[in-house]
Image 1 (cartoon, rainbow, N blue to C red):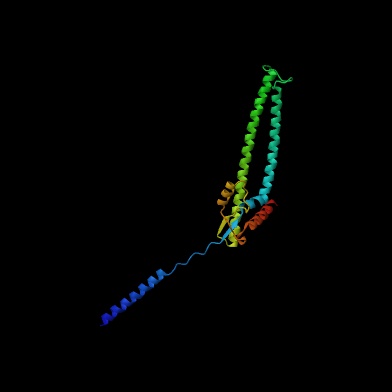
Image 2: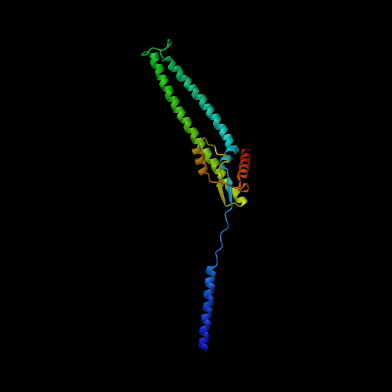
Length: 205
């Protein structure tokens, strides 16, 4: 009789433990906290970042100087060409002066081409380097602002207006948009831009 009671007790304990295990495995797992999403207009930041504005002004001045130098090259080449052009004051082919001007013209044209290629390459490399540096600065500041405000995901927001001339361009820009709607409270563009300009102002002192 005692042995039967012991067996019944053990079976009851096993049953209770089994039910507890099943209930614990069936309990729903705790879901992760939902992502807090912000949006930022990178294009507007680039257009209004003081560092980008100053760089654009410097590049414009550099291009104006390049254009001035190129016009000078062009005039020198035209003057040499005029000396060989067959007018009343043109040099006669086969004379030493004609050969000298022809040689000078060839050298000047090669010099202009080489100089132009060098200037274009330098401008492109400078633009790429500075643009990458500013992009990295902007991305870092976006992360800083997002973290301070408790956002875990930031999406790139395009400008509101679609600048197009044809229906195909309009549809292409529309389908490539990453954000169609964002509540204004999720916009961090102004804060990012403010922080960047304040930081840049401090670096210039």
